[in-house]
Amino acid sequence: MITTTRRTAVAAAAVIALAGGLTACSSDGSKPAAGDSSASSTAAAPKLSGTVTVFAAASLKESFTALGKKFEAAHPGVTVKFNFGGSSALAQSIVSGAPADVFAAASTKTMKTVTDAKAAGADPKVFVRNTLEIAVPKGNPKHIAALKDLAGSGLKVALCAKEVPCGAAAVEALKAGGVNLTPVTLEQDVKGALTKVELGEVDASLVYRTDVKADAAKIDGVDFPEAAKAVNDYPIAALTKAPNATAAAAFVEYIQSAEAQQVLTAAGFQAP
Amino acid sequence: MSKLLPTAAREPADPSLARARRRRAHRVPYALLLPALLGLTFLVLPLAGLLIRAPWSALPEQLTSTEVWDALRLSLICATAATGVSLVLGVPLAWLLARTEFPGRRIIRALVTLPLVLPPVVGGVALLLVLGRNGIVGRWLDSAFGITLPFHTSGVVLAEAFVAMPFLVISVEGALRAADPRYEEAAATLGASRLTAFRRVTLPLIAPGIGAGAVLAWARALGEFGATITFAGNFPGQTQTMPLAVYLAMESDPEAAIALSLVLLAVSIAVLAGLRDRWMSAP
Image (cartoon, rainbow over all chains, first blue to last red; front, side):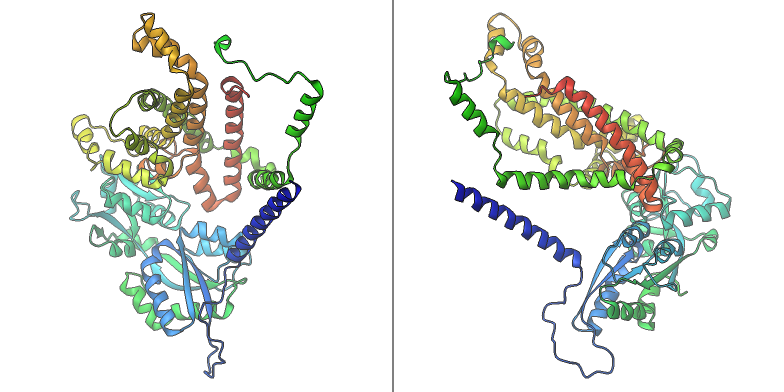
């Protein structure tokens, strides 16, 4: 009787210990990649290894995924892991101690959150710029040609919430054009605003050029002059508490290289 | 009703035996106690963290903004309306599942409970595809009546009801299965129609079950985020419920988000505690 109780207790304790161990592992974040050769390299550059974890703005998803593969090909033994999301939310999780190596934000303001908290060095590098476009369903059924058309009656428009970079940029652009419009929804990130157009739930939304380009099969973009008044700079920085500092520095370097810039401009970004 | 319920198991005649049995019943094995306490800590600690980190000094200022009260008002109204919709549609549905036999009943039951496991965002997309402007039903609603549900408060109610109704159906169905059908049969032999029997006999019998289910559904609707933002969008005063406001505040001002969460917590606890005493018969 007593022995069974004790055995159960031991089993329960083991389970708890195991669970604790698992969480400890997963929060560690930088496990050396499997199959990592421990042979000393004779190359001049320090041989990179392990995982580099990159937190990047949702609008960088397509181009960074491609660049990650190129980076892995150039440095065998390195795995690049991405976490794409709204810049503000990513910045918050980095400040709260998420184990990331690199942060690429869609606005200097969100990067400032991170540098102010001393979670990144003082000099993030702006690696691309992005401007807004009016996203409309394929074929532009409502014949939207300018920003002021959005304020037309009976049009449903989605914007990003002002808390996220694409929303802040939209507010700037509308102010520059003196356009006063009431959107039907304020989306939490740029992909949400785009999806609403794609599904035909709204007639138009203000998103980045790059998002329109990435979704060219279903979406058309309308350029407007006021977009120049609301340019978003994209800064990138290696984080101070990066579990894999050497690989982080190399990745930040790589994003600013000519090869990476070519991929980014092909996606619709502008060179800084 | 209580007279008809079976009497509880009788105490043994020997008082010392009874004492021993009670002692055995009260001794908690450590193998259960330890994980139980860990579980309790795991559930309570994050909430305590919210209270510890709460910006108490800035709280009054945070809570005087009209956006907060708009969001709270909308949350309470929509969660209550969604519970109402769930009651009107869910109780008859539960009765159908519990009291009738028809081919494919099991499949129907599985379908009804599907929103429980479906990610709420997927639920929101599914609602859009059916009730949105280009949806199967939504297109017809739009052209015939000029009704568009997305981006409108009614869309919030629908999204919340979609996610919350299964809780109520499951709860009421369980109560119906536990309730003795012989009471209804007795009522029927005395000349009551099926509807009268349901209204006068069955409903009072399962009232605690309905109450518990309604509370669950209301709580689920109050915290609903994914389906709401996907189907109804996010606009202050129109579709921005409290969870949406919290999420967006987290993007720019975590302190405001914590303040909002505290309000939601306080309201939920107050309502649930108030309803519990009334509805849920303590064992």
